[in-house]
Length: 310
Length: 252
Image (cartoon, rainbow over all chains, first blue to last red; front, top):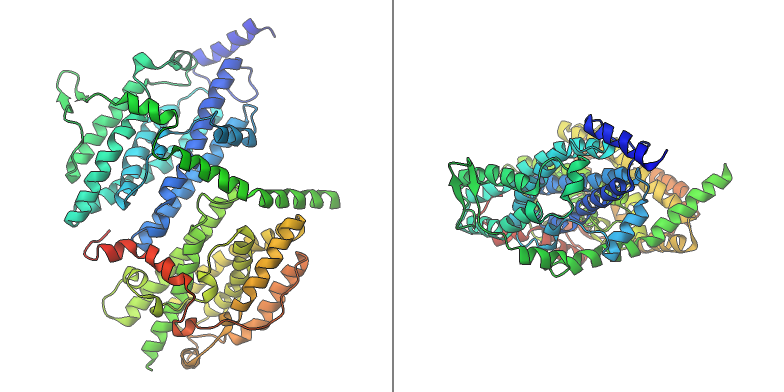
């Protein structure tokens, strides 16, 4: 099959809103785009276990500890399905992990910020998972079948995460002055990085063109960000948290909120490695991965012994 | 000592073992040798914390002073904890965690098999649920003993070393005092000493299948029945109890 025929039948499926499946032919650029996006998504789930894990041993109640453990376990599980989805495109988990550790593959920038107080655990569940859901709901209709199916499963669990995060914030806002101060402080630190999670403005988003044509992406960065802001501002008001944006205002004509300018310098700086926790996160991943090498070798050796025995 | 006092301490022991073991397992989050093990160890931790919550809630009820399970987990000092010393030892490397898990799960398998027949319905109920979970914990630890014991010379050496170091903490699992004696009279408590031969058989056979030498019984550490712990427990609690202690008026 020549490349024109391949592209025609691929584009016919895309135009008919049919899923592309692992054995279907697809343009090389579609494959590489997806590998990059899905592996980045998987890495984000896995690296995200670190900042939240930072509070497991200090969770303030047995219930809170169980919820946080279950949540982090979900995140690890999401990492697993996403690695598997990416593997259907012809890359191994080992290769993806190597790309993460060498810096070739990225993970969500949000996890380069430190999780300083218990309120940050609430803010992450509510804002970070809240932002992730907006993006992931839209990805349920992405054109690559295994990715779309992984998103269905992930979205169900993420909405539980967001509720538990909001519950932490709501409890703290109805608590002592110290707790309210802690909650507002977390809000102040996590709001802007959460908005950055949707990526650059549409006018400045280099890869969006192909992603739209191939229906990998269905909604633009700015559309998704707007959706997140509109639902979150109301939730913040209900529990008495203020949004740290002096320019935030309801726009009657557009029927949505206008927001202040995002600090794109900070965004670029952190993405390029100079955030508060970039080095810490990758070092942690590398150190424990290396520390576990003898365990993986033992498991592999034992598996081989069993196979020889058969 | 009244029966109520005995039952309170007996239930605390069960709750504290789960709480502290669960805490140590939870420290593995994001530190496992493979992602699948991160999930497995977190799962074990979740089972243990759930069990701790159930036993501590019952202990608070027995005490009858209006406390909650969280008051008992977060507001007692180190001398008031009754978990077996083996649970509070640091996680060490993966072989150490697996060896510890095997010794504990094999013990808990027999312990909860018996306790699920306790005349105390609450203890029996929690134990029956725990038994289902422990079967899985035991299989997990056993499979890893085979892999590490037979895998490579490095993994074999680490696992053998871990069992050697941990062995002196196993005597305490079967220790009994006047609390056990009193509660055995009406079938609330079980005879721990009688579990040891079965436990030793099970552990011995798994170790033999893993080509690991069963350590010899030498000096056995003791203390937890009287609230005497290793130095590690104080640090563990200072982490667990940090928020509750720093903000005593807050609820979370």
